[in-house]
Image (tube, rainbow over all chains, first blue to last red; front, side, top):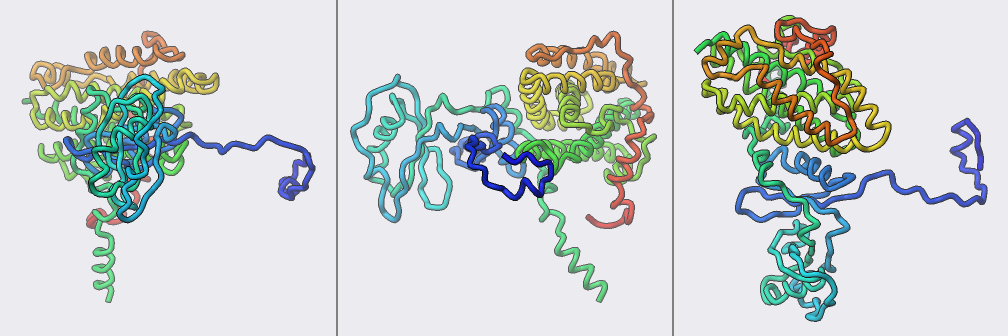
Length: 201
Length: 251
């Protein structure tokens, strides 16, 4: 290994033949964020944050995804805990490809089901189902959706893997309603530049 | 109702929020990770928004326009506590200040939501929601880093020791404590300090940090009366630089 203190020499990448461990990416894992715009509306997948754990993910998600809009609730789940099907297209419902048989292992608990109803849009929370594992939850959801509009992709998440807002913290969605100052458009810069140019002419 | 007492109360709250909001916004683009950069900047914006709402209440009581009040005063006319104006230092200091300050303000607004001065009570109820997130944010970070590594614990501990005398300056008594209490406007700085101390002790006890013995500390007072450190005037100059080029410009 070349131990030169001169960075120009080190950048040459002179091959040495020695083995070194692959360097992992210097970043936190990812968490999926779901947002409820209004009370009574369903939760929808909104995006992803990096974070060291669920609590921090929730902290980050709250400001990434609700600082400009009204928001009634957020929940987060670690990306690796989201189980996904393949994608279908056109009139092909993904449930056509889901087997009615499933493994029986695991303790029964609650699972949440998310559907992609339009390609290119986000996944919506559809409902929950008690099951012993992710595959069974998917199979149990199938009879309700096999004959409806095509579903292009399904996500299944164990409810206990999700971090929800505590009831006592719900007041944090109650914010000052005036948030327009956060958007560049509120300052009407283009109008002002036009006015200025007209005055100059 | 004692208008002069109410104005004194509103000015110190508004100035605290504006100055710390501006300070915290200096982290924009320099936060420790992208998501935190956005969260911290967004909370700084909340604070500036809260100060704007307070200056608006003052305007309704006959004071100048919010922009004029915010941008046209010099440091000796500001009533913020000195804690708010101190430079950001490293992220450990900014987090500790955020923790100490926001718990004090969450409790202050909770108390004020029962104020006999109705416009302030209504506004305080609205602001409580934003503060709940701010304290949750501070709490989560302090608990995380306050028990993580030797470096994170010692950095937070040093910042806590440094910030504590200034934090006690948040509770500098007003000349109008008696009127505020007897008229049911605000239950007073001493009552606020006791509740605050109980709350931060509860959080600190869940970490490996030690709360300094506050009976041995000399609180950094004077901010409420316009006595400031050398750090405030440069902040004001920078904050108002563009506004003062043309105070009549339409934004």
